[in-house]
Length: 368
Image (cartoon, rainbow, N blue to C red; front, side, top):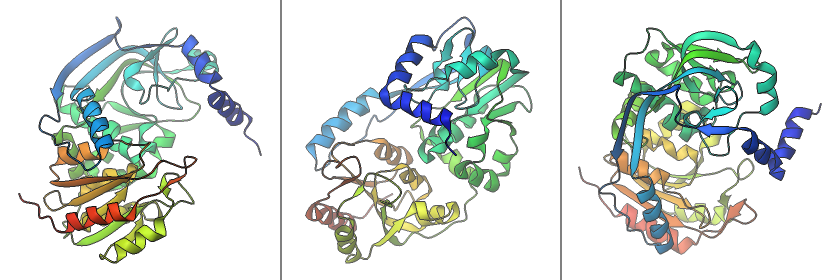
């Protein structure tokens, strides 16, 4: 059975018409009379980060992007009398103001018609922390924008047992549920699950954000998982299942054979359970990984002994996981750049370039 609403929205998005209409209707705001920072602080990160890879084009990109994000903010924000829509958990101030701090990406806007139809029927509550309506669907953002943010509770005194508002889709997602099962502290928060057709009007809505690349919240998040100690020893090539995801390798079999000759096993994290993924990263000492959200699990590696090579196409270069490695204190990180994505699906990787990087990695010791 066709979902007419979903098809209609997809057409609007792909044609760009939906975004054009949204931008003409909504006004994004980050300051207003009813927006109050209960706590706000900024930090400079990446002060001593090294940018000396073997790929000049990557070095240039990374230097520019690192300078752009060197100063980062943490805050506890109070928004008075805000609507929270149930599809992405975006906060709205009457009549058409979107609270910028509650969006994850610039292109996010609430759907207009549901807002116009439901705002007068919204369930009214006194207070809530707007935890997550969207981020948890991506492992990287689940940790960066979701879990890490709860540590900001240490900065302010919020009402006892305050509800943590989360959309149903995020609450039921495997990333959320994995931590929910493992951590009594996380599970013990007063979770208020927002159903797909349920709107809220919150008198005092709080939004938390930590400094994204500050070491302390990342390590506190790792502690929440209550992981048993494990010895790292494995050599792993973390690839991507081309049948399920884009940005895979066009010559993966050739790459896998070369890496196997150095003792690497090829693994697809998306085919593992969450428990198996965590154990994989805990027990891996030498990692060659294609760029993807699963690489955020370097958080679970032995930071004193981990060796990582990240592989990415030349037209999809990002520094996120190198920044995270620097934040965590991982002492060996290298990057190998492949060719351009072909139709957005796959890219070629020069075997000689990767083999050279692997030999260098295997012959490099890391020191405390």
